[in-house]
Image (cartoon, helix red, strand yellow):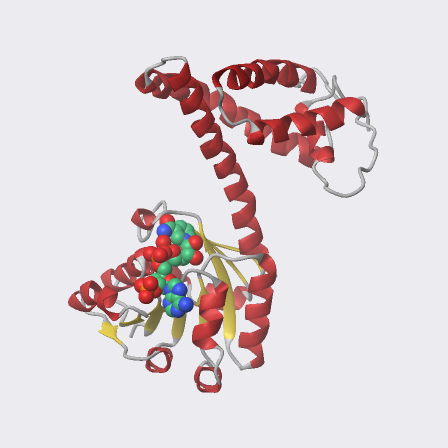
Length: 302
Ligand SMILES: NC(=O)c1ccc[n+]([C@@H]2O[C@H](COP(=O)([O-])OP(=O)(O)OC[C@H]3O[C@@H](n4cnc5c(N)ncnc54)[C@H](OP(=O)(O)O)[C@@H]3O)[C@@H](O)[C@H]2O)c1
C-alpha cells in the first residue's frame, strides 16, 4: 500500500510534483490558494482539499511548494496545523535561504513532525524524469525511508546532509553560476546586436566555446578547494590574461552604450587583487577578494 501524499501549492512546480506522484500511483491530495489550479490534477485522480488543514490531515507526507517561506508560514503556522503535523514528514520544496530552512525545521520538530528541506535544481519539465535533480537536507533516516516517494519526483534526488540549511545553501551556490552565465549571455547578445552579428552565429560559436568554459569552471572549483592560487604549469589562465581581455569588453560596451554595471563589478574585483600584488596568480586567487568586509592578506604561493 503506497503512502498518502499531500502537495500544498499547485503552481507550475507544485502541479508537476503532484502529477508525477499520481503517475507513480501515490494517493495524492492537493491544496492551492487559487482552487481552479487543482482542477487538472483532480482530473488525473488527485483529491482537491478545501482547506490546508484538510490537506495536511489527508497525507502522511506533506510536500509544500509555494512561492516563498513567508507564504509557507502564513499557511502552516496555526494551532490547528501545528497539531495536525504531529508524526508526519514535512518536505519543504519551496525555494529559500539556509536560515529560513533552519527556522522551518525548528518549528516542525517542535510540533512533533519530521522535516526535510529541499531545493529543486530543475524546471518543471524535468520533474518525474530520470534527469530530475532535487537536493534534500535533514534527517538521513527520513530520506532513506521514503526513497521510493522521492524517486517518483526525479531520478536524481539526493540527500546532501543532515543540516537543514544545506540544500538551500547549495541551491544559492549553483544558481550563482547560472545567473553568471545568463547575465553574461545578455551581455553577449547586446554586444552581438551592437556589432551586427546575427544571433544564430552567436549560438553556433557558443556551442564551440561552452566546453572550454565548462573546463574553466571545474578547474576553478578544483584549484580553490586545493588552495592552488599561485600560477603553476597547470594554470589555464592568469589574472593578468583575464583582466587584459576584459578591458576590451569594457571598452566595447562603453563605446556601444551598453550598461556596464555588472562588468564594472568584475573589474573592481580584478583591481583589488592586482593592487594586492596578485596580477600573475591563477584566476582562482580572485576568490580571496570577494569579502565585503576587511580584506585578509594571503600569500598565493602557499
Ligand atoms: N518553476 C521552476 O522551474 C522552479 C524551479 C526550482 C524551484 N522552484 C521553486 O518552486 C516554488 C514554486 O514555483 P512555481 O514556479 O511553481 O511558481 P508559481 O507557478 O508562481 O506558483 C506559486 C505557488 O505559490 C502559491 N502561493 C504564493 N503565495 C501564496 C500565499 N501567500 N498563500 C498561499 N499560496 C501562495 C501560489 O498560489 P496561487 O496559485 O493561488 O497564486 C502557487 O501555488 C518557488 O519557491 C520556486 O522558486 C521553481
